[in-house]
Length: 522
Image (cartoon, rainbow, N blue to C red; front, top):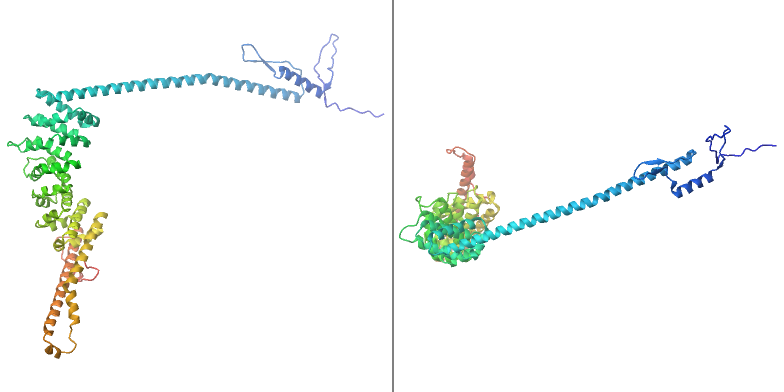
């Protein structure tokens, strides 16, 4: 009978030897794998899934004695043990993070409280400082109104000057405290130091504050300043400079311009500007020139400027680059009225001087302003165009259209267009109608017709006169073109740094003597 061997792979024999009293080894009873797995599951369910138990008060683990298991069971227990240890470590990290979070929150809260206390302390200090400054300004305003104590008023004026020099809030506060009328009244003092302190205090109060500028003018400051100037004894140069500076500051406000212009300040400013000796400083002359520019913006003041005979002095002073642009700016305001244009054109060599300013390539501002003056006069004053042409303006304008700034190029082109239209009108008016009459009344027959008609001789003479007029016109245009080309060539030679005794060749002379339609200046 054949023997069948049962496959006991599914069974596990615990071959752990056990010594009995008889000294023989006894085998453990074999049981199935399914039963062993159930036992392991029951042990895990009862809390015995880990090979380690935590001791009381200690983080170390104690191993649990288990019987020797096959590879599959041991692997399962080992993985469960690793997962349990990982879980414990994660819990410890979370507990540590939870313990640190209150500390971080408490530190942030402490920082916020400290910052709030610091900001509150700063605000208290700033508020205290402002209160102290206000009290100081109140004391200054009170001392300034002490009519019996001149020394205290002078000291208060000096303090107002210092407070209003750099603090815009102090300017408004001092004006509201009523310091402007006492400062204006202080100008009546005979003390030069008090006058200077009052003038510069008023000057500083008006810096960047139009309300204060209007209040200073309403308080009668301009009339008191002119009273100091017109006194029998000439004022101190420092007082004059302070008055000019005040006129400059007050004239910046549009509503003050007509009042200052009509008060008589313009002749004083012109006198300061024209003063040839060293009585007026350079700063005073610059301030006077700028004040005149501010006043010239208002049209009603132009008549007061023209009465001072200032235009010849301005045209004579052109060339000094420190004042030329400002002078041209004032002249640009003066040409806005017919009286101003007439005054400029009546000055000898006015147009050659202005045309020369068109060639200042290193000063675009002067070129733009000079071209504006000539443009307005060319459009408004018909009789001045021929004088401009004779001054060599055409060649300067042609060069300006190529080398000038954008604004200067536009203005030069407009002037050339104006001259071109004007020249066309002159030509048509000169011989347009007469030539037409000659064409209509031309004789039909030969020489015998002249004897039969007594009016033919006079008509022929008219035709000859027209031809002479045309030839004279052509000669004038040809001469103008040649002059323009020669002037341009001289400038090119000068820029090329060629010798002054440079003699053009015959070829060059032939080029300049030729006139084509392309070289016509109109």
